[in-house]
Structures are given as structure tokens and as C-alpha cells.
Length: 209
Image (cartoon, rainbow, N blue to C red; front, top):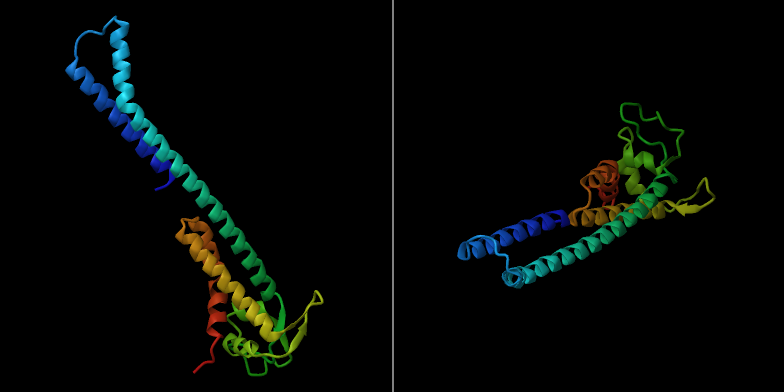
């Protein structure tokens, strides 16, 4: 139950309790309104004695729910920040150059890409025209070093591993974010954008039979 629902229920319960208590009083002591301050003081004591603790209890429940919602919001913000970090790591890895010697291009001859020796990892993670299964498996154990555009030097297997760990971290935290009531639109975006790369990296973790 969220904070808005809790407040609505509390107000409803407070309204019902007020009607019952006041209604019971006037049912038993019906008559014209008194001009005596003592009668009004007694009425105030009656109302305060019965409804005061109940209102205080509802206020306490509302405070607890507010604190719970604040804590949950902080957790969701922490999770989404972690998801952003894993997304940045995955996109960085996807942009790195990896070995891909003469990749098989679907619908073309065997020599259609014979002059290609390397590709951005993103091509293997997202493209449907390249035989990604074979080449991702080769990357998993690849010992070749590739100099990147930013001057960084990475081994093929390290790039594959970094991408796989980033994808796993992203989806593990995304599932936790979803289970805690995170925004559905955020979950849908990440599943749509990164589920295929994650599945391909996981599928390449073991050799094909």
C-alpha cells in the first residue's frame, strides 16, 4: 500500500469513527443544544477521550508509512543510479573493438566480409546479419590485444567478460528495482534496449553442443 492509499484509508476510518462516536452521543443524549458551558465541556471531554487516541494512532500509522515511503524512494534512487552505471559500462564495452576475422554475413557469400578483421563489440551484440554466436564464443577465450580509439589496450576475453558482467549487473539490479515497485516504464526501456545483448553474452558463456 502506498502513501496515498494509506492516507485515504486513514481519513475514511477517521470519518467513520467520528460519525459513530458523535452519532452514539446524540442518540443517547438527544434534545436541543445546551447553553451550558459545562455540557459542552463534557461533550468535548467525551469526544476527545474516545477519538483523541484513535486520531493519534492514525497519525502514527501515517508517519510510519511516510518514513517507509521515504526509505523506499531512497532505495529506488540508489538502484537506478547503479543501473545507470552498469549501463554506461555496458555501452563502453559495446563500443570497444574486438577481433572478428572474416565474419559470416547472412545472405551473402563466404567471402563477403573476408577483408574484415575486427568489429565493434556492439555489432555482435545487436546485429542480426552477423554470425554472432561463433564470434562471441571466440572472444570468450580470445587472447588478442586490441588498441582502442582512446588508447586503452584490452584483451578480447577481457572485453567480453566486462560486457557480460555489466549486463548481468544491470539486469540483476533492474529486477530488484522492479520488485520494489520501480517505474514500469523504466523497466520496459531497459528490457527492450539490453535484453538481446545480455542473452547473447550469456549464450556465449558455454560452447555450442
